[in-house]
Amino acid sequence: IKTGARAEIQNVAENEGTAVRLISQSNDSDGNISISVPADVLQQLAGKSSTIAITLQSTSDEPTQVTVECDFQSLGDCARHRFSVTRQKSDVLLQVRFDRSLAPNAAGSLIINSDVDGKARGINLYAIRILPGQ
Image 1 (cartoon, one colour):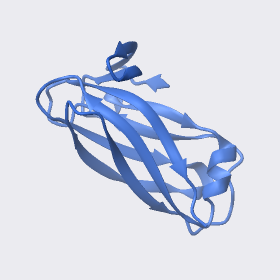
Image 2 (cartoon, helix red, strand yellow; image 1 turned 45 degrees about the horizontal axis):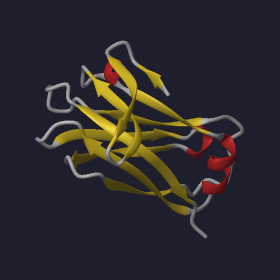
Image 3 (tube, one colour; image 1 turned 180 degrees about the horizontal axis):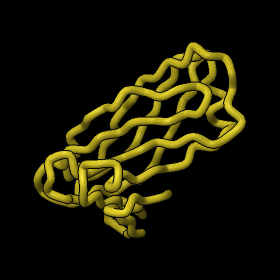
């Protein structure tokens, strides 16, 4: 996990399990948090429709607005998705389709920003699961 100049991460233990707390302090790219996706995972997405599930939880009792986008090297990007994350641990789902069959040979990244509304709230990240299509 890599952070922009105005973002931070912390390892935390919550009642629901261990997580990584992501805190963006800017809704610009310097508040982005980038999570590496290995090349061998990206290769399984080439030419398929796939699902990405990200388990998140707001650290506040108020909903936290987050954006998620991807940069998957030669496969391409996915549109920026916006989600409202609540205090209840839940999954946000991205449906992605990569028609290109050129499989990348380098890691890509999922990019998360938790400061959409300018309130610099954090979110807990519990898991990222990628289900390649058929």
